Image (cartoon, rainbow, N blue to C red):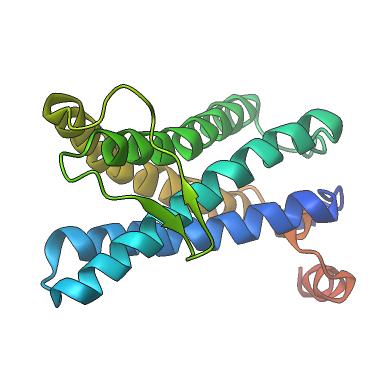
Length: 195
């Protein structure tokens, strides 16, 4: 029988977690598609614009998430977790946060340094500025492009490790962490009854 962690994150933290997670999955998928699949040029341009818009949205959401976390610290981890797992969880979360900021920043750097100089129109609503002083700098663009690609692979691996850790805790340690990130009481109740 699994122990259920009943110390929940607050609703804003839960919403930010899931919305950003879904957005990052879409962004990673779009990035892979843009790099490896052939599209009609007009469609490809539109996908790039949506990808850049998503990057801006995630950059803003990240800063809001950090501010929110400062005012509303996360709940403590369950007592039953091994000490090594607690350290790994903290390092993993720091790694995820570092990648959450590094991915959109390297994308912004790449777009700002692009020799094409195309504007970023965020969801057709407003123009996001380029980082000043690097327009048309091909060397910076190439470095940022490479970093963005490598960080995308690292981020994918970190997300997989994050999900794997939750599954491992549930199956091996018999500690169900999912209710901490499920906003509905009914879902929590159902999980608790199943364990």
